[in-house]
Amino acid sequence: MSRFHVFRVYGNRFVFLVLVVVTLFFSFSPGSVSPAFVVNNDKLAHFVVFFGLTFWLKFSFPGFLARKLFFIMVLLAASIEVFQYLFANREFSFFDFGAGGLGVFVYLVVLRICGWR
Image (cartoon, rainbow, N blue to C red; front, side, top):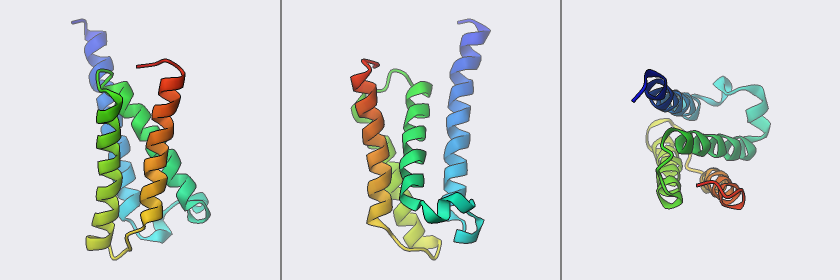
């Protein structure tokens, strides 16, 4: 395995991990810490974030099948909502969870339509 291949694989995984940490930071921060465009477009932000995270997960682990991607990302979306309710003095929002799940689903549909695996 060449150095470039190792850097590419682990670099992509590192980027995915950083994106997850940033997502968790904004998920558990008070509303005032969130960027201004997120305040008025909360569901769109959930959709875009989970669409992008699913892209990076697939890019980081190309061998993962769609079922595994869907399960991991929907579990992350559900976990964020449950932990917000339990620990962050925020409320569980089924619509936030649904918007995140929809972002994952739409990415997987685009993946299938484009013929990528």
